Figure 1 (cartoon, helix red, strand yellow):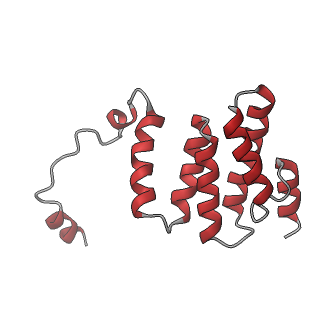
Figure 2: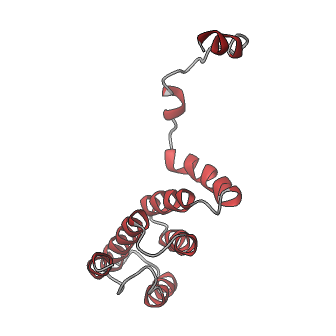
Length: 139
């Protein structure tokens, strides 16, 4: 096996950044991540992990409509009761509640989010983080 690996990597160049320090040293990591997420959404839209990553990154960026979009796409391809999707839903609802209380959501966006949360019975479980967790525990 070692001989096979040596032959495979015989012509391979040495990695100038084996620990990934240069790769991790970007000034705006969330902006860089968004570029890759767009590619994943285009080419791996049938993979749950794509949408879960979108939920996390866009929640950190404060882009609640994009988080909602990712949740809806993820809930369309995974059965109800998926624990990873549930975590994303609870985090989204908590972020939404916090942004609404702080007044950080523009009125048109707020209206869309509230309407979609009301309609989102497949994933929202009542529209608050607590009711979402309570509903999930009953499954």
